[in-house]
Length: 255
Length: 292
Image 1 (spheres, each protein chain N blue to C red):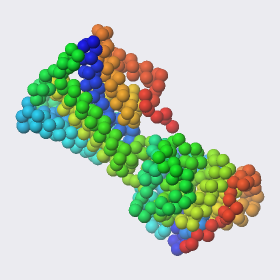
Image 2 (image 1 turned 60 degrees about the vertical axis):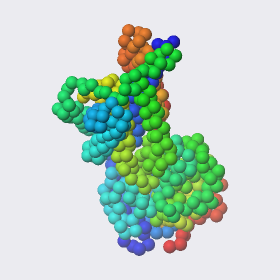
Image 3 (image 1 turned 90 degrees about the vertical axis):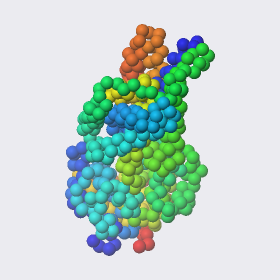
Image 4 (image 1 turned 120 degrees about the vertical axis):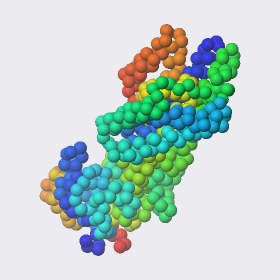
C-alpha cells in the first residue's frame, strides 16, 4: 500500500438482512485531508462506512495504515484509532453530555482541550441529558465523542444532515479543525460543505465506485455532478449560502 | 384496617421476590435483547444451594442463613455467567434459537434438580425470627416478608449505584439504548453481557433463597412459577427498565394479594388481565422506551 494512504479498501461487499448494499467497492483515503464519499440517496455510502467499521457483515480487503482490519470486530478497529461520527448522531439520550464523552474516552491521552475549545457550549451543558439537546447540539456531542481521542482516521457520516444553516457552519468549522488532527472520510450531501472541506472525492453509484479524483475538479463539472448525483453542482451550494465559514477550504493537514 | 395493612405488607414482600427475578430479566433483555427463559432455573438452584449450605452450618441459625444466602447468590451468578458464556454468546441476534436454548436449559436444569433433590418439595427452616410475626397496628405480619423487602430494596439500590457510578454501569446504560454505537466507541460490549447475566443471576439466586423462606419450601417448580410473574412484571414495567420492573413488581403483587383476598382468589386472573390491558393500551409498558 502506498505510504501516503491511511485507508485502502479493495473489493468490499456488504449486506444487510441478506440484501447486498455494497458491491465490490474499492477506494483509497489519503493520510491527510478530507476525502468525500458522494452519491445519491441509498447508493450505499453509509453502508460502506459501516462495512469498513465492521458494523455490518462484509467481505473484501480493508487496510488501515497497511494493516488488515477486515476480520476484526468493530471495537478493535476503533481502538486502532478510527473515530466514527454516525449518521443521525446516535447520542445516548439517557446519558448526560459528560457521560456520553466519558464513555467515548478510549485512553488517558484524551483531547479534552480540543473538545473544550471547539464545543464550549457542551462544557456548559455537561450535566444535561443528551436526549434533551437540540439536533445541532447533539451533533456537537457526536463530533466531540470522536474528536476526544487521538485518531488515525475519522469516518464522518452526514454531519450536517437536518441542521440549520448556522449550525452547518459550526459543524464545518469543527471538521476543519478535526481534519488538522486526522484524515477524514466524509459522507456529505451538502456540496457547499464538500467544496469547502474536501480535497478528494469518491463517488458511489449502485453500490460501486464510479468516479474518484480531486473534489474541485468533480464539483466544477456540472455534467459529472448531474450524472452521478442527480443535482447541479451549485444548487445545494447556493441553498447553503452562508452556512460554510469563509476560512473553510480543502484542508492540507500536516503529514 | 389490619387486614389491609397485612395484605399491603405481604404484597410488598411478594413484590420484592418478583423484583429479584424481574430485575435480571429486564437488564438482560434491555442490553442484549435476550428473553431468558432459564432465569427461573437460576432462582431454583439458588434456593437449593441456600438450603444445602445453610443445612451444613445450621439452618436455624443466622450465620447458617447468611452463608446460605451468599451461596444462593454465588450459585445464581455462576450458572448465569456460564449460561451466557457457553450458550447464549453464540446466539446473539438469533431470537428463536435463544428462546429454544433457554427453554431447553430451564427444562434440563429442572430435571437435574428433580434428579438430585427429588420432585417433592423440601421443607425449609430458618432462624426462629423468620417464622415469627411482628404486629403492626393489629396486623400480624410474618417476619420473612420484611427480609424480602429489605433485600429487594438493597438489590435495587445496589444495581442503581452500580449503573450510575461505575464504568461498566455506564456501558450497560448506554448499551441498553444503542448497543452497536457502544461498540463503535471502541468498547467490547460482550464483556458487559457476561457481567449483566451474572448480576441478574445473583439477584435471582438471592430471590431463590428468600422465596424458599417465603413459601417455606424449595422445589423444582419454584423457579417456573415465579418466572411467569417476573415476565409479566417485566412486560408491564417496560422491557429493559429497572425502575419500571421495581414499580410493576409492587403493583402486580399488590393487585394479586388484594384481589385474591377480596374477590374469591382471582388474583392471578387479575394480574393476567392487567397484563392484557397494558399491552392493549400501552404496549411499551409503564417505563419502556418506544421502539425505534
